Image (cartoon, rainbow, N blue to C red; front, side):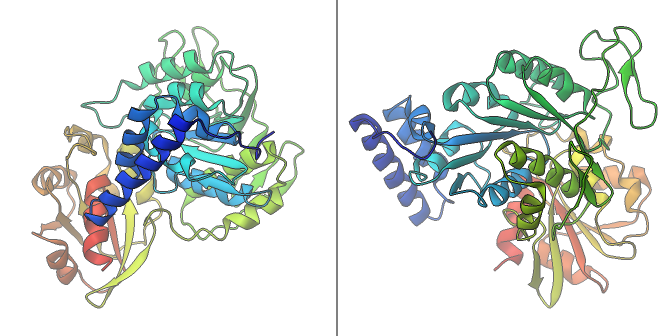
Length: 412
């Protein structure tokens, strides 16, 4: 039963202690939270540590290209209605970061863990999850990530025969194909705005048909499953047909979708939808995302968009024109060094917004905006960009490391 932790082996105890020490040194040196280096040190000393620190927990794994950090936070908030939760809330979602997070959860009942989509099968083998939430698969970090169909195939192989209940997005054909190998799947209808990675059938390669909100392959018959949970406007529809109001402070349709999936996960652990959704209202920001900060006398809202699907969702939640917008793009290791994805984003949606462009790859972005026919101004720094913005709350949209740069500058 979860909550009854067996004592760690002497080797595991040493690994945990060494990992915490390494993390503390990293923090003292100003190099971040230390969770990744701490986990790496701990796993080097005991390669089986992840399985040991997860053994007493009811674990939920959350994986996707977009939305996993926010959904992890919402699920964690909902499950706290039933007991203590340990989670990698800061988004360190590879085995080292996950190990660090779970090593601090000896008194918890639940482990709510965000997992990088490339590591899902391996982490699932180690932690034996009770539930796995799958949100979407789309192109991301083109220079190092596998093609989406290959990722879906890895998921499909890893989920075959799993004992976990899989809560999966019925509107993403790649997710459906991957999850269909699992014996116990709960389908959730939350929509799919970005469709450009799922026009061919993952099962046979045929052309997908997409009438309205439905989808199917006209060649092999692979089709959208009937969902038991669904997002409907501002409400979650449960398997009994009851409608529950979504009470979020986080903006946008994408977060209502995240809340719907989170409610379905919480229900699998006995938390009623009303309780789960009410608890989610407490979440105002996730690792700095959606924070509104004051900087140089201006209000700046910080928004993260890492890939085409994420940029599309973010455009739908920003204030209407003439709200000023700052765009920042880097191409460092954590972002992926290939910026060709910029051409997949419809920047024409920003027409009417005064736009200021910063970041390591500001000139790449400037060329893309020039072609999109929107007005913009290139700036050398966040300070210059903010000073150059006309009145109104500024919407600052940045990819991963550019977002961290912005947080450090405007958050102090």
